[in-house]
Image (cartoon, rainbow, N blue to C red):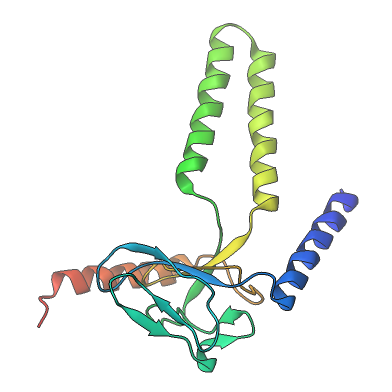
Length: 178
């Protein structure tokens, strides 16, 4: 167990070194506020901009970044960002469904050992994905995903804060625009 944790620490340190030396460049995946199309920015650095093909553009200034971490959402300006694994939820659902169906099929053919091995195999796969998948910062308000950033001091999802932003979105949709 100690060896695994030590190796994970070495991998994290190597990745942090790549971030510090500039091998990785921060990018943002977002829905354009103007045309509502999903976009992915290129390098996000001071003097550059996050932009969409429709012409929407948000310049990046020194006040927006501290090192390789955004001080706030680069799309909407919200200060509240949470840390999340960069893993597509649909792929996770497919893995769970495949494991469940495979294990139930083995169980139906009176192969309980095979069913348990299938479940354990998918548990190991889940653990490996969790260990090796990178994290991103996600904006509570606009759900923009800031990838390849310094995550020091960032917290996981806060349900109370998430509910506050969800209620704000509901109020904004129900209030007529002027």
